[in-house]
Length: 224
Image 1 (cartoon, rainbow, N blue to C red):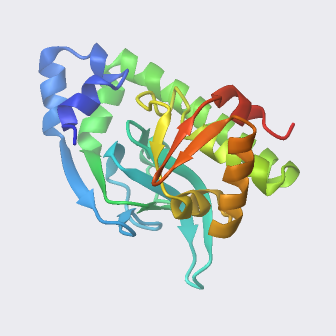
Image 2 (image 1 turned 180 degrees about the horizontal axis):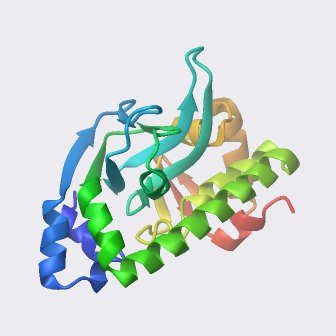
């Protein structure tokens, strides 16, 4: 289990801060442990924090009062999210739910605003982050409309290794088939079939509770 300092030092924007700035940022963050199935944040609530996944795995989704769930994307260790809601200063438009017990860094609004107003490196990071997230969601829409479940699952897994959004991930992903299904919007049984097909194609290796990616580029273009 790593510390908040270790996560910050691995974040491109934080590495550019002076020692005094780093300390100020550190003091503006609290780390909370969210249990499996717990809410990291909820749709409709006031947006008071920018958030990062210290360790664990969470899902950005929209959960309706009818019980219907629409999954948007997975957020793995090292990833920061929620900057758009803070910049727009409006109620949150989505839920974020922990797929397993996760430790989340919550940076308060005043610290985020101070960084936004005082750090050129932080502003550059935000531009790159927002652009990458936009490309991710456009790609997801395309995949949903054009690809079969096997290819959609391949893209879902590949998205968790985005080097811009999640720079810390190695190629071994601690994740269950149930968690993959929740992220990809596919049943657990269908996930198992798709994973076996991807393994047979030499793109990944399946172990109990984990997946090792063997060909990330292949996952990103599988089914084309």
